[in-house]
Structures are given as C-alpha cells and as structure tokens.
Image: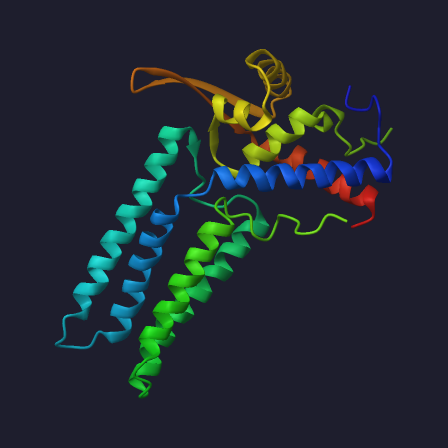
Length: 160
Length: 96
C-alpha cells in the first residue's frame, strides 16, 4: 500500500519540504512561552550564574544560588503545567541522536559559562560573574524564544 | 522488490503536518492539531485513524479535570517513518 506511487519529482519534493518547514515555523510560534515567563526563567537562571560566580566562604551568595534555583524550577514547572492545561505536553528528554547531542553541547556551553564566571573572578576579573550571568541569561532567553520545542538544529532555515 | 522509503501514507499533506507537529512534542491534544491544521473534527479523525492503524501514532483518551481529553503522540515506528520520509524527500531534492 505504501508503494502505490513510489516517488515524486524534485519540484514536488521541494515544495513539500518548503511547505512543511513553513507550517512548522508557524506552529512553533504557538508553542512559545509568554515573553514574561521567558524573562523570569532567564533572570532566575542569571541569578544562579551570578550568585555562583560571586560566592565564597563566608558570604551570602550561596543563598542567591538557592533562591535562583528555586525560582528557576518553579517557573519551569509553571510553564510545563500551563502548557499541559493548554493541550501540549513538552518533551523533557530529547528524542533522537541529533537532538541529544545538541542538548549535550548546550549543557556543556552553559556549564562552561557557569564555571568561567567564577574562575575568572578568582583570577581577578571582578565583572566576570556579571558578564557570565548576562551571556547565560541572554542565551537562554534566545533559545526559549526562538526554539520553544528545542528544534534549533533540525529545522531548516532555507528551503531553496 | 526492495522497500522504498517514500511513504505515501505519511506523504498526504495533512498527515505529514500531523507527524511534524507530534515530532516536536511528547503529546498534543486533539484540538491543538485541529487548530494548527485548520480542518474539521471528522477530517482530522479520519487522518488520525489511518495513522493509528499503521501504528504511527498513539491515541489516548483520558478524563482530566472533569474533561475528556484526547492525547496524541508519535510512536517510535511513526518517528522513524516520518524521519525516513523526510530524508527521502531531501534525497529527491538533492540535498543529501
């Protein structure tokens, strides 16, 4: 039954891919979180990065990590719950080798930012936690806005 | 006769879009897919039945918060079939 019409021509295939990509782009927009929630999640994540960079023995910045972490997870849980009420269950764990690799790369990038923020401060660059927090928060906001379903590598940008 | 990766069942425009939507998420509710495809309940149900019979999607009906909800997800077979079909389309276009 799958072999009724075994293939299509190049133009039809290109048109199909283009139409599908356009459809997915439009659909992805409706899966996007509200801007306010994106900002709150990114700010709480920035607080984690900043607090970690500033923390030392005897100062209170460890509390900032805890507060940032709690806020981050609360906002994420809220967004997951809201999406569920709307009829969308998001994938917590990526499916497919490509997606897993992409997520691991991102995890490494964020990990490097987290550690670099603190290590550079120890070396004497006072503003490294500030810069690290800005980069991490900005990057997270960008990813949440632009790629709400996580398909940043698999979606085609140009279809011609 | 070798099996062609071109999947006529998935290739139908609405079914292709259904698979594309489900590929992005864990599960989607019926009304979300209906809104995105802009089709009637009966048209969507027909396409979903075809995909379900092919074991490409899973349809689960649950009562949540006193409301009947129909959740749809791609099976692993469905994911593979969709991915293979996309790769075949790209191969035809000459991208791979």
